Image (cartoon, rainbow, N blue to C red):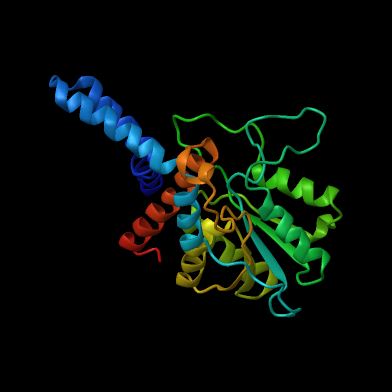
Length: 260
């Protein structure tokens, strides 16, 4: 029930949900001045959320900062990669090669840690996060991510999958079990996107897992006052705003229900 509630709330409290609500209000209201207000607010909101300057400032505030390459630690030899867009699970490439998704940098960061000898094992955590009424995945994201890592040179024996979790809370709970049963530890290097890392770290700490954050997939950029950055809205900034605000809302919801 919480899974469905959290996914639905995440949509309603994100830019797309706000725009839809304003436009529906403008469409159904019978008073002309309210209709004008609804359309006007929707246009203003679209401009604000599509403003690269403002979105970049939000990213710089919210995203977890970049981490230096950790030293080799025999008690922290597992990199835990959280799924959620690392591969394109809605298309089957037929010839067997994986199709990477918008969050594939998580896999790249884990691969880098492995190649540099910082970790010896990679645990991919995450199952399907789709809603019952949404499109069903045609491939398993964890399996596809593992196949990509094998193609990149990771030994199959060094890849572990946890494909039952459907949200960050379950990522933490189920990963803890695997770490204890298979690796006799409660320590790991945690790899996820920079915008997701705050919530992920808190979730793992809540269940007793000692994590070393190693974020990837940054949306922020150096500050720029170029006219195009603040005057003209663009789709990339709007998408970034969507992801950032969704993460902030998710963080608040998790704190309210006691998951962090």
